[in-house]
Image (cartoon, rainbow, N blue to C red; front, side):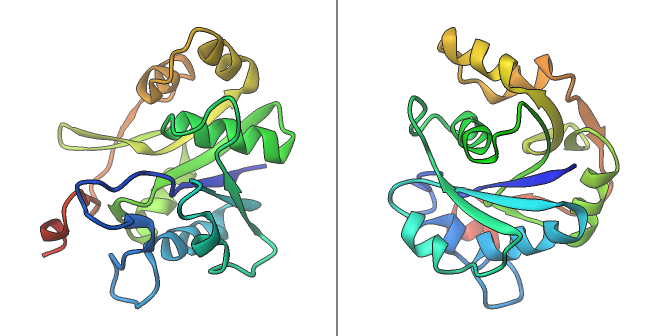
Length: 182
């Protein structure tokens, strides 16, 4: 069983507004909905991870039974992607996760999601890694160990999960500032 985890709980401070609710695509729908919908053909269920500020706004975007909006849970509040992963485990009651993880700060298309669905690893274009655009298999015990050690580094978690780089020839763009959309 493969699920997707959409990372929509970032602060978006450089972007000056919530990137999850911005429009990065040609459609006039928020990026979080666009990204979640892209994953649906490849997964059994989609989880959208939010923070306390955007949880309500994002929850109103979804009425599909295959999509669940979750919020950061104790003890990991505002600890980046690791918070989202913890919340996923708490919500899904899984002990092993097979996840396609995509942050909402990417301008992404269907071919990138299809590429992720084919094998484990994170996308790398030329020499640039996109760690929060990955497909990983991870046990909750590894995450608990990281939490116990107060280690919230996403890249280290990927390394320990044998989630390595996969060269991708398609288009993917990380959006940090509004001008990155031009």
